[in-house]
Image (cartoon, protein in one colour):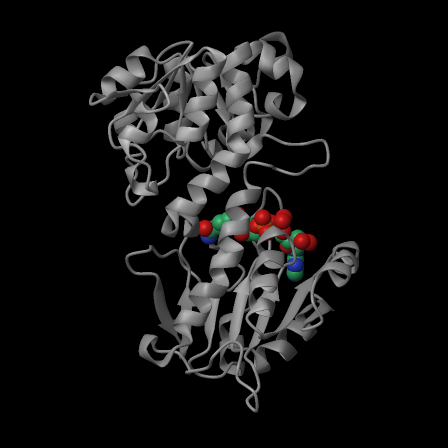
Length: 370
Ligand SMILES: NC(=O)c1ccc[n+]([C@@H]2O[C@H](COP(=O)([O-])OP(=O)(O)OC[C@H]3O[C@@H](n4cnc5c(N)ncnc54)[C@H](O)[C@@H]3O)[C@@H](O)[C@H]2O)c1
């Protein structure tokens, strides 16, 4: 088995799908590892670090795609990569097929086996290969929010933690899942006063046991959101309705309730956002202002901290990649229901119902194909 790791070519994507420690472990199992020159550089891993553990470095991206039986990536293949994907080749990466019909059709046409990080799912319902990126984004939301509250960035000039004799900032977190909990922990750790809203009472009960006393937990409804907006210096949007667009819980008119120079970081922007005035931004131009409120809406926040994100992502993906390389995709998917659920397209057939539904395509039973 040859495992190939191409350099990511999507704009501003600096993550890599395999770190040298992973390469070492794969090589120890028997497979060969072929890494495109410079693939790890954006995350701080030099070619020599891969060479030192027995991986081969090639200057040719075509070489990686042509020789590898399994490709490990981070982002979905983009157009220049489509022609490189081969029939029968396993491609293990984020695909987000339902968001792109051209990508879905292109991957169907290649005849590859597409296993999507985002649909690998544990019996608890957890999506273990999405969780680490939500952890990164939740923690980063506070860091970014604190930065844009600074005067020089147009903010109201408030320090999150305050100082003795001066009250700390008020941070409102809407949604108490992975993003919201990580954001609340970071903001509370910096000394801010945090209010976290969720609609799940079970979740609020759990959070009341694990979060520090400077985090208040409140049931999420329109009345409570409006009341909190008056006080908030930083609002973090972290709501998710699985498989649906995020609800607009803060309307444009509500911004008038907030203090000028306050900051909104809507992490849920990748699902449409929970603030009505949000539209996706990039790391190059992360913010814009509406009605005096700074909006931060980077759709791929983890891309801003590729070193941490690569390590967090590969910690989660590597055990699956290792089993795929060692046992082959069919056996690995038969052995592990979570990985089986990652199967989206098998040799020209869509096997994930959500993807088939999105584009009115027939869905095949993956059970008969593994
Ligand atoms: N921008 C980025 O770079 C980036 C990175 C990672 C995740 N995300 C996005 O962040 C969002 C949150 O992800 P997550 O992993 O925390 O999801 P999650 O499923 O762990 O948590 C979502 C939470 O929202 C709560 N919720 C639902 N409706 C609500 C409402 N009306 N009011 C308050 N809470 C409500 C749910 O009960 C749940 O606890 C998703 O849209 C995800 O795609 C964005």
